[in-house]
Each structure stands twice: as C-alpha cells, then as structure tokens.
Length: 349
Image (cartoon, rainbow, N blue to C red; front, side, top):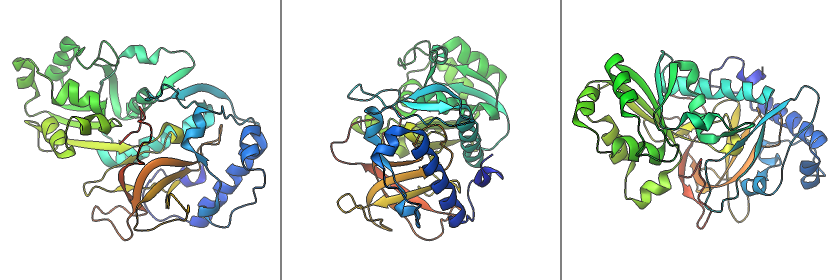
C-alpha cells in the first residue's frame, strides 16, 4: 500500500517532503518504463519542489498511448471518458496495483462525505455498461467506487444514455423495501431522469420522507445551457425527503482516476494527502495562490501509466487558510473551463 494512503484518512497534515519523494520516485519509474513519456521529458532531474515536477497536458492522452512496463505491474483494462465533443477520447491503462490504490482513495474520500453505513446503491446507468470487455467507462468506474459502502448495486436505466428509460418496477420495489438509499448518476442524467422527470404520483409518494444521499459528477455544462443552477438542482432532488438527505457533487478526471474532489458545504474542494493541486498562470505557467488559473492535478497512485501529473483545461483558484467545514489541508474553487476548450464527457464543469 502507498505510504501516504496507509491510514486512509484523506484530509489532514501531510509531509510535503514525503509527497515530493513519492512523486520523484514515481516519475523516474515512468521515465524508465514508458518510452513515450521519456521522449517528452528526456532531461528530468529529481524536483526540489512539487511545482517543478514534470506534467502532461490533458489533451496529449488523446494522441499518445502511454503505458509503463515494469516488474509487478499487470495491465488489465482501459478507462475511457463517457463522451467528448470531438469523439476522440483519452485512453488510460489501468493496472491491478493502481486500481487497488485508486479504489482505496475514492472510498476514503467518499466515506468522508457520505458516511460509511451500508445501504442499497441505485445507479442511473445500464448494467450493460459493465459488459465491455477490457474497457470501462468513467461513469461506471465512479459508480463502482461507491460499491463497498452499499448492500448491492441496482442499475435503474434500460439504456445507458436514455434518461427516459427508467425501470419503474425496480425503483418501486426498492422504495417499498428501503428507507435509506445511495444514488449515483452523471449530473445531467440525474437531472433528467430524477429531479426533472415527470414521475407517476404513486412513486412520488413512496419517496416522501426517504433518506437519500445523491452523488453525481460531470455534466454541468449541459445544465448551464438549460439554465439549471446548482441550488435548483439540489432543491429539486431533496424536495420531500428526510432532512438528513444530501447531495454531493464531485470533480475528477479520467486522467486522474481514483482522485476525486467533492464540494464541501462551503463550496470548496479539498485535496487528499496523497494528491496535490496547483494553479498555474495560463501564459507564464507560474504557480498562483489566491488567483485564477489552470489546474494541475497530481497524485502518487498512478503506477501503470504516467497520468500522475496532469495539466488540465479547467480553471480554479487555491483558497489559503482554513475552511469553515473543518477539513484540513489545501482547498480550491472550481471555476469553469478555459474558453473554447472541448466539452469532456466525464469531468466537464
């Protein structure tokens, strides 16, 4: 197990020196095992600061097939975004070691936001999405990260991208048997299939007073185009439910699998101790604090391909000081995308 992930407590004090050492060692391993990566950074020397670690622009994963070969690494599947406007998707090779670390990371982060008591997990996707051999979509991977804190997964859609294909009989059966549920959906599908759907009145009555925690990711661009504000989104989901119900929106990239950034009650996204976030000036690439720039996301879990340090097309701002929510460590605001950047299927904001 990765040393920084051993205690599985995502937010708290961290040794920056330990993180830098992990990242330097990981970078060196990728340079030795991935010729494509070595050609991009041929003159690497161990960094003295996190800001000096090499990185890849998120777009290069659409053009180059990165895979690191070294002892103990067994590649198993390819992770792909759900969709992009260009139709050209990143391909991220998943290996067994990284998958175990990434699953532990996602689970520790999600437990901190949604709790760890077991309840049925309802997924707004089709079970057919699990059947693609050798591949897995980012949407299914996100749902699977919640599986360890569920009593079982139930796929509510007959067709993966058809929000109108809800399985009413299955939903009715689950609502009749359970008062506490966990629901995951891609943001725009959760809105169309659940929050804004014209449901039968008998099912709406079954929902009254239920304790439901909704988890969603990606897809905000489509809702902005429909003029749906986050406050409206949350209020529509929670209407008539038990007061302890909640909504957790998380940000992540397929190129940074296993590292997710849920929004806390104060609107900030917190960085786990086994990751880091930098904000860079788009013109000079200088690191910024308290100013808006492009996000660079780093983690020390990616063993089988060099997606451990990625420069994104997303805009953000590091917020100094302690967060009112009580979580320790670095926090940032997610502020949108670089103008004219491609809309991404799994992580657009």
